[in-house]
Length: 164
Image (cartoon, helix red, strand yellow):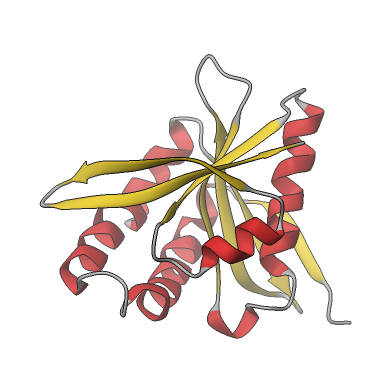
């Protein structure tokens, strides 16, 4: 069987998320972002302690597995005082891209949002990231452009939303 299985992540899974982030970010961003920025973002956003703090502050994670091997993850949370579910992180291994895994992770978050009577998904994507096309194919549209100061860098993103 070659099926994708989605399951909720727990604090015991932070080492797996940390490992995946390091395996995924370099191929995804090495030609798009300064290497110092990649290292900094991995250190501040994907260190095991940072991931545990994100879980404690309300971010949820789900893992995608194929044949018992974790191949991707999504991090998401409801925006405070909002009816929007934000996808904070969505990454799959390069070998897994194009196999429907990212789509399944989005559908998982959409189902949880709908069950919570939330009718909009939102995410940020780097303006030069080819993943923007993937998100558009999933029904997301650009609603704004943002520039977010991040240490000595500026994150230049699109904010994208999808109505459920």
